[in-house]
Amino acid sequence: MSGTSLDGIDVALCKIRGSGLDTDVKLIDCQTYPYPTNLLCDIKKSLYLSTSNAQLLCSLNFKLGIEYANAVKKLVAANNLNLKDIAFIASHGQTIYHQANNEQGFIKSSLQLGDAATIAYECQTTVVSNFRAGDIAAGGDGAPLVPYVDYLLYRDKDKSRALHNIGGIANTTIIPKNANIDDIYAFDT
Image (cartoon, rainbow, N blue to C red; front, side, top):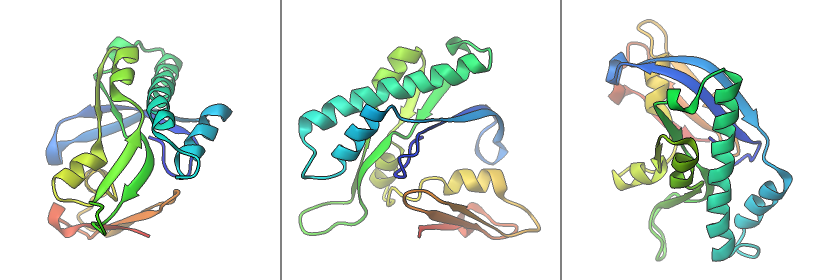
């Protein structure tokens, strides 16, 4: 994951068992790898119409895919594992632009770069990606992105919880005590 704060590439190695409400997630390791200076410069250029163009975006998409694959490889090696031990990689990508609403000829949309096919090839495993686009296609807003995961990890029979992500764009998930999935709500701040 790499957010709009541009502080680096967050990589988590997890063991996941079960599905739905019976999902159990164990964090094995996590690291943040800083972007190389030249790549960070390209990301910043891509964020503004005055410095961005199709050629930059196209190239950056693949450069990020390679860099994300390298980050995965580093974390896997640091934990004395092999890439063949990894069932899948979930890659959010780097948000370049998020159109939160339909307005004046533009429809709700979101653009994340970091080519999933490049990551899959480099790491020789399945890559799941395009989470925001998937949420928008299903009628959502594409953000916040993690309320369901927050619910799976932090729901409690006796305690209400508020989880706040502080990034380039902060967001909050509210999980009332003894909540069902339809009881939670989340918003950008």
